[in-house]
Length: 151
Image 1 (spheres, helix red, strand yellow):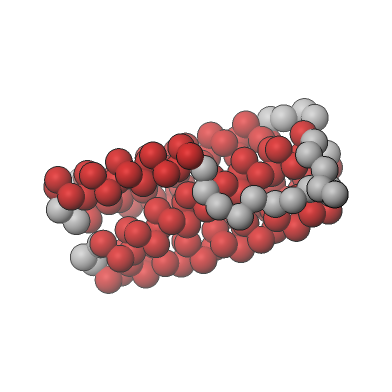
Image 2 (cartoon, helix red, strand yellow):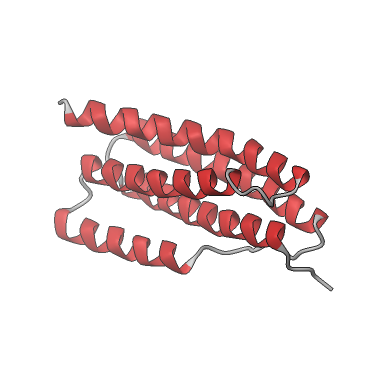
């Protein structure tokens, strides 16, 4: 029987948010016009899959059942991105702006998890490992957004 505790709750929240990130990157890779951006988005989606796998292992180690789908908030964000894309067309700059906004949200979720004093050492290590990918993705998309704005 799967256990639900503070660690599994935090880890599953991060897993769901990472699934949202994967979906966003995959959709954006399909919609973007610039093949270099599509490659960046595809690589980020793969990095996020690896981060999910690590967090899922940590949930199992804590006796829980890992999430295997995205969040309701993520579904709402994807609907917004789909609507925005339908209205504005697949504008690369608009897609990057939306991805960067999603990265800000993801960064906040991970920072909150890392600030959770009740997180066990094992769960904290899993979160810190995934955080490396999240931070790198956030920073890359932020730089990309600002460089595109300067054009």
